[in-house]
Image 1 (cartoon, helix red, strand yellow):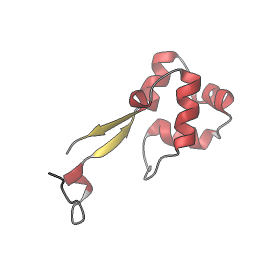
Image 2 (spheres, rainbow, N blue to C red):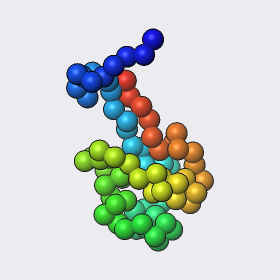
Image 3 (cartoon, rainbow, N blue to C red):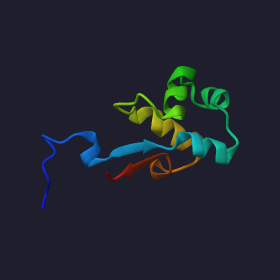
Length: 82
């Protein structure tokens, strides 16, 4: 059945990991190059690259990244169970 998470903390339900840095490294793409390819501000790319301080994701950003890097969303985002 379904589980309620109303009274749970992050440690109890897991997290979503952003794997942008690894995908960029695999393709030899720098943050500046990705900025040039997508038109997205460097600080936005840098935040996703570092994968810290992200509470919500921008679907438009990830669509652009998937398009220019020719990857799938599952290459960029991964659910990690607790």
